Every structure is written in C-alpha cells, then in structure tokens.
Length: 193
Image (cartoon, rainbow, N blue to C red; front, side, top):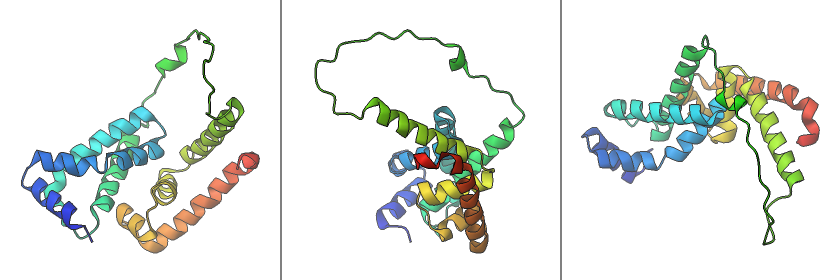
C-alpha cells in the first residue's frame, strides 16, 4: 500500500528523526495546503490549517499503523483540523483589515510585449473562480469536504470513505447530493461554465 521509501521515512519518523519527518512532509506540503485552501477558501486559514495538521501528524506519527495510505491518513487529519477550527470560529466575529486599506496605483509604460492573458480573459477567469469558490463555500461542511476531496484532490470513493470514516455508500450519495446542490448554485452563472 505504501511505497518502500515512504515506509522507511515513516519508520524513521517513529524513531524521532526530525530530518526524516521534514523530508516526508516536504513531499506533501503543497497538497495539504491546497486541500486546506479549498476547504477554507482563505489563504491565511489554509496556512494555519496546514501548520496545525503537520503538528498533529508530528505528534501522532507513532500511531500510524500503515493499514491505509499515508496520504489518506494525512488528509483525514487536515479535514479534521479544518472542521475543528470551523466549530471554534462559528461564534466569533471577523473583520477584515483589508477592507479599510486604500492604495494608489501608478502606471508604468510597458517596454516589452506581454504574452499573458488579456484583462478580459483574466476578469472572466477570476469571476469563474470566485463564483465556483463561493458556491463551494456555501455548501455544508460535509458536502464541501466531499467536493474538494473528490474533484480537487482526486481521491477515490474508497479513499474519501476512509478519510471521513464513512461507509462508501454514504460517500457516493453525499457526493451526488453535493453535485446537485452545486449545479443549482451555478445555474444562474452557466455562461461562465
């Protein structure tokens, strides 16, 4: 189930080797951050979730039995950290400091041709991304986790069932319901998709 190099790293981690832990985590840090971002929809929260998740992994690595893929175990921890943070933050009010910052922009003449997308394409791409993220963010936590784990992280039904500790039939039905809800939420914006 786990490749030999990863198994050796995990065994060294269990013995307390920090360099082995750093090497193991370096291989997953981007995927963990991406999962955390897709769940939270916020760069700062994703960073905090990632750090908390890696701290939990460091503290619990000795409990990893290797019956599942390390990535599945890790994604379960990330998802649990996200859900724990959501529970703690539900009753707290948040004000963004960025809402009160005003910047003056200077214009500079372009000296070379810019091969990047046009402002119209960038605006449409951003709008599509924002609409999609807003739709995902408006889902209940369990549906959001299903969409992100399946469509963004590429996990199979079996892996999602393991990450969320659910029967595979429940995963399939919840994912199907989440897709139907997403379709309804995106219907008014179908021209973007």
